[in-house]
Image 1: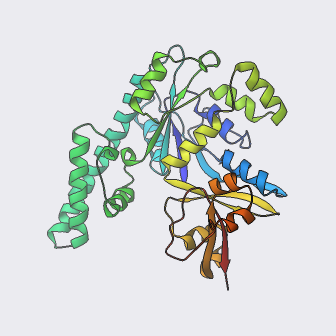
Image 2: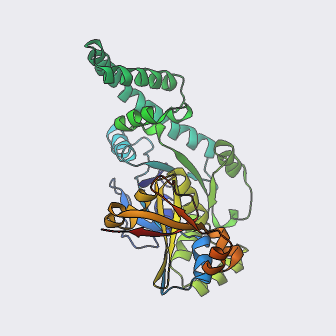
Image 3: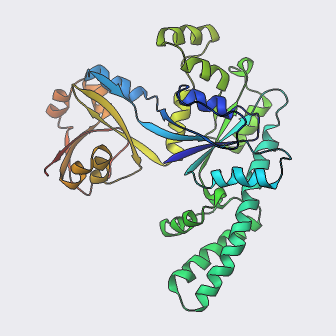
Length: 344
């Protein structure tokens, strides 16, 4: 699944992308093509699990990140359509908002939402006409699509994004098939300058007012930190009065907006985090490790990482009766540490 970084031009999206991907991807500054990379998900639980089950290596979960070109200011319909076409293909949006001198956070948030709503209106108008013609022929699927599309049209006509309405799973599938951009889950990121890291400005409050789950970062600082050795990182953070990089908080929020949860595998060779869609059945979770494990799934032996933090060892977990044996119908829980048994 992909998270798309969006925003107006000059808000620090690409700098944030570099911080997330630790400068592993050569970026194309000013290009109308997106920068695409993979970001490691900083995870305090993963590090703690490795303290109790020391491995040869620690492997974090990964998230695909797309740095979508900035929405042009007066750049013409062609440039805007190029940007919107990239937004349409990602699974969730991270809207980076400029929160330093010269930025109007409230206006930027409203402008981006308006662009997405207008673009979706164009799509739904044509889609309603096509679905209506098919529905008149008695096509049951077309009737379902038409009902959803007419509701989408009503929501957008009220200048509200599609995501503000309640949709069941079947309706969500129809929405996704049309690529409605305002239906995508969105996270706001207040990008502050170096002087604003420990402050609470009006711009930051405007972002918080629009999204209670908004994350505050200084992309410039995070980008610099991502290039440093761990010892140098700690020294820089201390000098600025910061406890830890904000990129971990942002990564966790991106996981949330994508609708993902994390489970862990732990052993002498490696301790590893895996991202899966929330409430995935155990066999599907096993399939993220290897298709053979899913195909030959027998059961999942698991416990919650909090039990490990409390009881200190897997031996103590077993003795306390906290080790569970779960079958194919088990929905994996965020924080599970699991060993899959399989036979192929």
